[in-house]
Image (tube, rainbow, N blue to C red; front, side):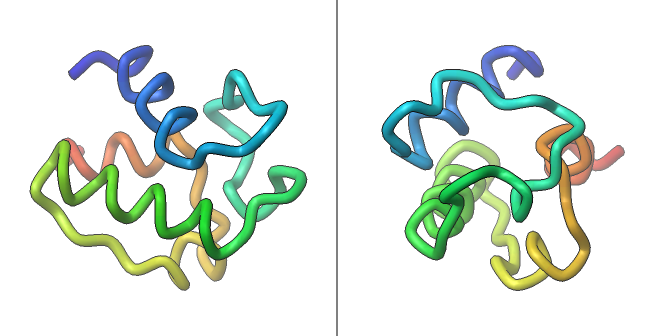
Length: 76
């Protein structure tokens, strides 16, 4: 999966009104209105598309960005 496809999939999976793109370098926890449902969307997307489970709390605690998540899911 390309990084652009990954970002598109994330936007779809978090299903937040008004969010049509994501900045690869903005931590998920700093996205306006990003909440537990959006976190669940990211977790579900990661499991379905990459067959990998991620910890939702770590997305917040580590201030993970979409780029960092992509690299982690791809074993980089």
